[in-house]
Image 1 (cartoon, helix red, strand yellow):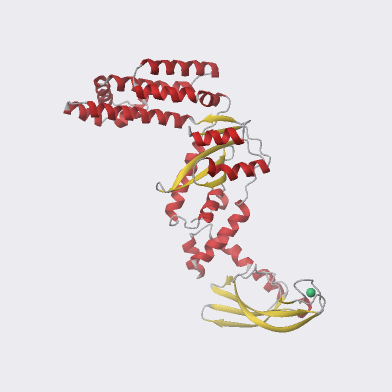
Image 2: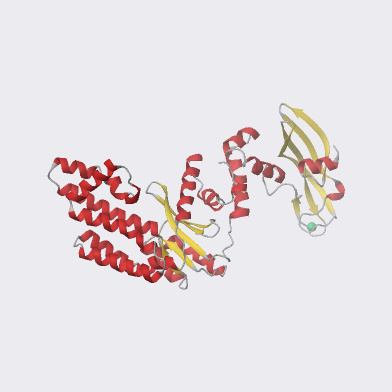
Amino acid sequence: MNPSYLYHAFGVRHQECTKTEYKGNQNIHYIQTRKDELCCPECKSRKIIRSGSIYRDIRSVPVGHRETILRMKVQRIECKSCGCIRQEKIHFVTGKRSYTNKFARYVVDLSRIGTIKDVALFLNISWDTVKDIQKRYLQRHYGNPDLSKLEYIGIDEFAVRKGHVYKTIVADLLTGQVVYVGDGKGADALEKFWKKARKAKAAIKAVATDLSAAFISSVRENAPDATLVFDHFHVVKLMNDTLDKLRRLAYNQEADLMKRKVLKGTRWLLLCNGADIYDSCHRNRLENALEMNAPLMKGYYLKESLREIWMQVTKEQAQQVLMNWVEQAQDSKVPLLQKFAMTLMAHRSGILSWYDHHISTGKLEGINNKIKTMKRQAYGYRDEKFFELKILSLHDKTYAFVG
Ligand SMILES: [Zn+2]
């Protein structure tokens, strides 16, 4: 076989083909290193003695819909210069792998148009081989994200398996790229991230998180110069939870069966944005429920006015709105609302700092949804590291693997 064909088709540069067999669906090329290319794998000396050889089968890219096997005669070499006795080095294979580097690249290319299962079936190799090739590729390209230019980050956690295993992710809010995936939740899960960020000399300006005490103390301790911004969707969600507790309380305290029924059916109406309820029948039902229970009514109107905090022109105005809100909640004499007012007060600087940096964890919600889809596609990713690498590569749509 033409040496230049051997090189261009299979990436084999220093070998010659001595024979080709066609068996079943396979083209088997017998190759061996050209005499003038043989040297000591340690010191590159040409003063060597060949002492035996073995054959090794190496998969390469298919030709004409047939599998290609390179049956390589691997020389055992005794070096007269450095005295070592070793097998020759094969340049087109990495380590002890049973396929060429070119084959691995081919698998990577196919992975962009088919799932791991598709690619494995198409090439007649195992699922694990395709996965390992993908994994190494992802590690090389996404395994160590550059943290040196990080300025705005968002931190969030999500459950990998319902309620059991947690992961904490850190995303670059400017690019939408996940830059870190930590095991577990809370401050411990972030430790490695801070270590890497310090090493990269990242100058983080602001961090968006929910109101979790663990995240807050972790940020304060490790990035004292960064501004904490509490994500406003999380604050609103917390208020919605409070309102729902009020509704359940009202329901449990109500003796009248008809009234109970009305309260039971208003959960969604209470929680959705009041301005979005156009249906007059829905409006009536909501008003009926609110009239039945004073604490619920107070809670509802406070919930509706909460978002005003983020609708002001200046931070000072927003602070005034927040303080008024807290005062009204305290005046309501409803313990659940008073408790929420305390939470708001305790976190007010992080809530108002939204006016300094308009950031939120909204991007992380989007990332979480993508991760959910990914898990459904591929049996929940039993290989944790592989799963992590897939998350780190999520932002790169042009190179995304199918499954
Ligand atoms: Zn040597």
